[in-house]
Length: 592
Image 1 (cartoon, rainbow, N blue to C red):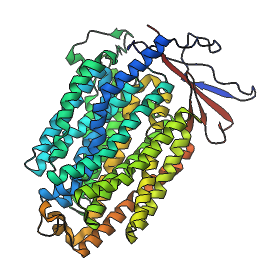
Image 2: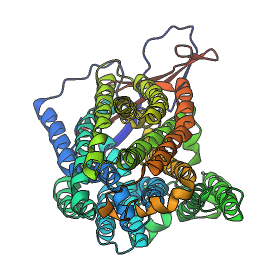
Image 3: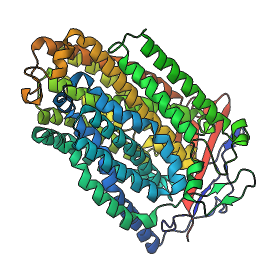
Image 4: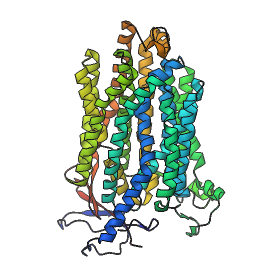
């Protein structure tokens, strides 16, 4: 394996392991291979091993700052959220700070998979880092709540790009086994980012919450430089597009020709439908009643536009009506519908959705609980999140072992994670009712474990299923995690605001004399109402994670080997309807 040749990527397949001749076997997604599976691979030379580790070192050096930017954004803002909203007298609208970010970071995720293929990894990565810089600057200098929301929306777009690009770049040019190892290295980075985020956020909030955004500006500038000089030579260039009419490879395309390949109708429809649906969830029962014309129209418009989006994506499949009418060479759907035909892909999408629900719920609404119900200062409330973070670390390290050492498969960590999430959230609601802090801390850690142990196996599993659509399928699956977080923020914010009732005005002012200077000092009655509201907010998301626990039982299993990945249906020990299904894929880089 030679990671030094960025453009020579050849998905291949190998023979399945020995089986009983009486078993019916279906081989899917097989592609021609040039190396006989029985041939013994020669051991890597010292020069090849040095080249591999040099490549990994460049990845670590080039991606660590962008990765840090994306990881720290959630934790550093979580502790400051009530104080930021209070400074604008908008505490009842604090969920909008999260929602404006989550909305764009959700809707734009699928687009970046396509953009990275059309324009190349380096140009796309530099663009999203620049968007982080712009969004952070707007938030740091925000003179109104609306200006803050615009800055958070721009940062959300950049976060969508960063999230996709991290996974895609780590998966480029390596086998699934090496992908697992590289994800292990960056799990350590994520653990460090999540750990320091609450501490930094609390300290900066006590000084001035604007520094929570301003700290990203110098990191962005440094990241631009490091990515250009260290990582650019290693990144995969723009992927060739094929003319569906002639079958010829398109090259030397202008910027406008590349732009025309993007599925702009799909992107716009998807974004507008998401905004309409999320607005309805946020306004329902708070700003307007659920049966009001405003909420009803938004739900209907959002639903219809989403159905139109699905129809357009389906019609853009090769050979279908829209693909024949729109003769743009190389144009393809933002989310190719055929990628969702497989059972495992659909289940993984829902598992990511449930994981996103739990992740953002824990980061943001636990902070509300400690800042208002327990009356903790910003830095002390931030420190409470540290009980959640060791769980993430323990989960991530467990996934490293299960994926890299034994049993080297993806199903066990996914099962453990989605067993832990409903148990922890269910018990957490009981602990909040009695205000038993030790039990709250324990369930925070268990929920963190449930999230952390699923971070690695989901992308590994989905890449094994669709290796030839790496960027697009990664973007599609990751969209559902952000969408889950967006739905959680909307639903939980709506539940909390409904529970506040007549106390909403005092809550919005921050209690006491109003403003951050009052230290968010609420009376006991308001604190009890907020406690009940936060508890019911967590109960509202419990069905999502509970259904995911059932769904994971129908998921297949991917075994991670040096060159061969074998997937067997879990139901019936690999047998379903009397047929055993093997999935084989080999993805390695040829020597230059």
